[in-house]
Figure 1 (cartoon, one colour):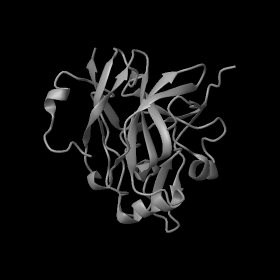
Figure 2 (cartoon, helix red, strand yellow):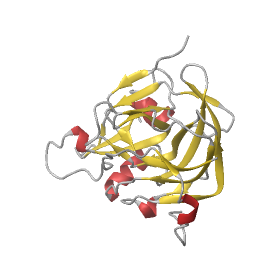
Figure 3 (cartoon, helix red, strand yellow):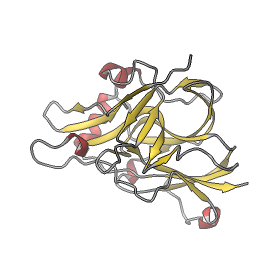
Figure 4 (cartoon, one colour):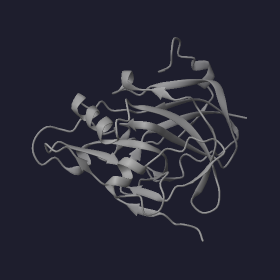
Length: 246
């Protein structure tokens, strides 16, 4: 029987001091711009309206939950609905992913320490692009992935990373984003209520704090399959991929 997954709003994890941060249930283009490699590329994940990622948390008391600093934490995920578009990260034409980009906010030093410490000393922010092939139900096979990129130096920006070895993709595959540590690319404030994304977590491990902080793991074994049983509503994970059609 196919697992339908759990659909929930984002759970929050706050600083002991009351400074709210949320862990989502949970080389910038070096040298030249290499615009030629992307000149005719189709941008996967681009929408007419794109919110900004949360962070830092606004000052003052009683900060609304959707304004708190948020991040993906040790997980692979992809958006299933964004700005009214269904399956915006589904590959519509076979080709090569030649570059990818991510929108990252700039948490305060205290917020960055919080993410690193809460996730069992996970380390600085990092990410890679992942290509998934749908299997039965909510299972997805990892068919290929880009190298991991360290992102501490580009927080607060929208970096684009050109791939030395483009990722060959076929129609119907899914372009996902993986963070082995954490990544402040999650937007709650300004997201549409219909926005939703899926995470590489098992049924029943979508909300519990211990599951999110200690058991959550990104999908990084090429050829392996994982359940994506957790769907989080009302939020966007902000990334994009540049596809050179075949």
